Length: 236
Ligand code: DX5
Ligand code: ZN
Image (tube, rainbow, N blue to C red; front, side):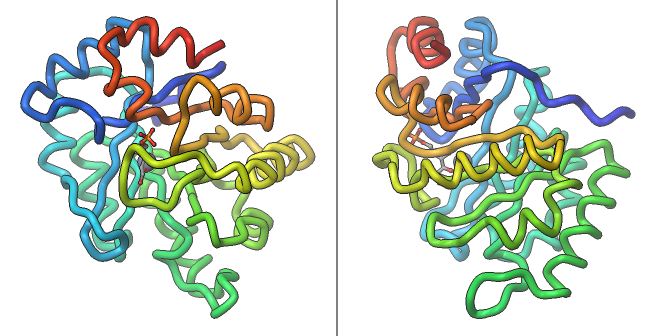
């Protein structure tokens, strides 16, 4: 099976975290019918972040009801132990946190951290699954991107502290989006640039102007009654 290409152009990726969990299949169909191509799945283990969501069985159930690109954000402590179950469940891309890999006290990658990341990229690619890398707001992405920017399918700049939906966009992260966009351009790297957290009609244009290509939106899509309008307004 071929690795699925991340849908191009400006994309809104609704975060399932804000959906009605008692009606997941119809929630997913609703956003797909309204033109969305990517669904963002927030996986939290109650350890890496102080919240628990879901694991591979739910990803598998979602895979059974949709062809949407399943963009899976792993906020978990031991990604090496779990990437295969998530890929087998049907995730199209797994985004790991640099903080869940080996780093020194300044947050710079260690040789071990880089080796693990490269190994996971290879294992995922063999399973036709993409790999993304993300960072908590306090982590400098530059040292990581300089090492592995060329092998990533996606870079995610967090604009909230990971763990919960419905938080406010951290404008202090905008230079990070610009940095990731400039590095991509200068090195001709292929990663898609995603922004996650606090995206709404006011902050979406800010993220897009900084170079974001995929905007994750939980509350601004699933929290709205008129999803079609919500998605269209975010895209402009
Ligand atoms: C936070 C998650 C986000 C969150 C976004 O840890 O990674 O994906 O669900 O929700 P909103 O768009 O409501 O900030
Ligand atoms: Zn997320």
